[in-house]
Length: 339
Image 1 (spheres, one colour):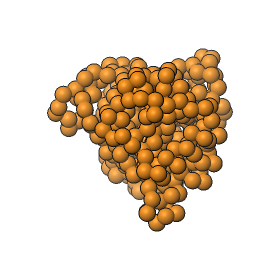
Image 2 (cartoon, helix red, strand yellow; image 1 turned 90 degrees about the vertical axis):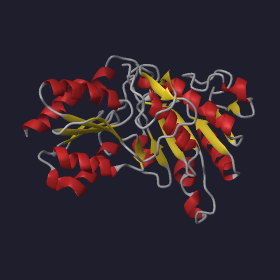
Image 3 (cartoon, helix red, strand yellow; image 1 turned 120 degrees about the vertical axis):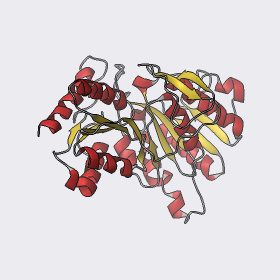
Image 4 (cartoon, one colour; image 1 turned 135 degrees about the vertical axis):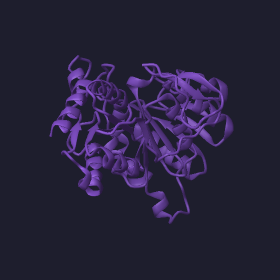
């Protein structure tokens, strides 16, 4: 999929980029602008990251600013916490989001608690980047979507872009945020999407959703790799005369509930699309917010299109059944229309 639209509200120079190139650009800008910014993680230095998101940054900014770490996620996050408390701006890369689990003690017990512990005397400006999600037939634990675990962790923010321009703008906002931010990047979108991305320091505010397509009949709420899937389903529904409003959350924590409720109040129908397992996923939180704040507007029950309550299937074509696709979303849209 190739998009050419200039990001809304931007009037300056742009350059066509993939998502991974936009992320690299944002990191380069941050390193050049602020010598407290440091990037570290497994293979981010010499190799430039497993997906080349940090390609060339060590050569340009030095091995003291961009450096490799051992294969030890708990140590990576723990070191970043110490760096942040010492006045630096650490950017840690976890090679895949499914590798975060060994670091959960650091995340749950420490990362999000320092502002509260110190009554805001100390902040922890740390960004943790990680590729997540499926669509490219990776091995076990490489396609996990653990965003709900992190969203349930007080004191951290969770950001998941779906376009190159948003990836750059949101990442620069995250780096300059005083609190810890998890920044998930859909593997499927790294090189499959291109668009015009603003040149230079460009910010997208954390906590503001994006209306991807406008419609009056059904609201489809999604983020990350599922935005592309929802767009395809919306295009198919449009041929049947159904107007679908696709909302890209962009940020899970904090979540832009106003945009969600305004849309659902207009359409009266809601479909939520995520690729994480069904039970207790972030889709459930979105559904709860709609039920609490917009139930009087609903013309049909909320429908969730999700992964399944099973480990993400590695390598095989079974992934194409596990991961939500446009057909499953289109069926959900028809379900709420026919209720």
